[in-house]
Every structure is written in structure tokens, then in C-alpha cells.
Image (cartoon, rainbow, N blue to C red; front, side, top):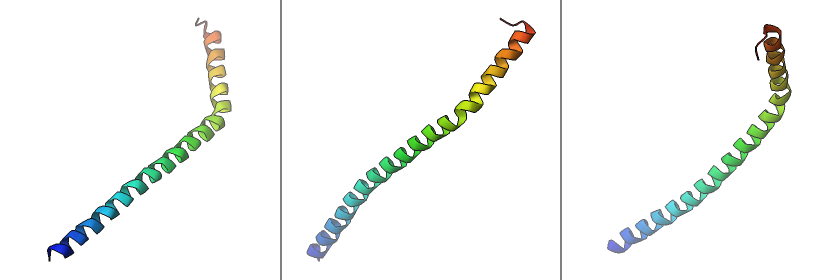
Amino acid sequence: MLKAYSRARALINSVRTEEEGANAVEYALVLGLVAIALVVAAIGLTPILTTFVAEIGTWMDAQGVS
């Protein structure tokens, strides 16, 4: 009986170790995808933000704000 229990515990521990390794790989993939999404969003928003800041500057000049 003790032998069967020991084998079961060893099997459970080996599965846990594999899951932890898989989790690290999954987190790395998610982190990479988030980084790519941030770069794409920044590139896409650059023209919009540039126009927005330029319009604020023009409005401030018209108001006489230094």
C-alpha cells in the first residue's frame, strides 16, 4: 500500500513540475504579445496624439497663454 502511495505522490509531483514549467512559458508568451500590442498601439496613436498636442498649442497661443 505504501508503495502505491509513493508512486502516486511521485506522479503528482512530476505533473506539478511540468505545469510550473508550462506556466512560465505561457507567461512569457503573454508578456511578448502584450509588448507587441503596446508597440502597435503606440505607432497607431502617434499621429492622433501629435495632432492633438499641436491643436492645444495653437489654442494656447490664441488665448495668450505662455
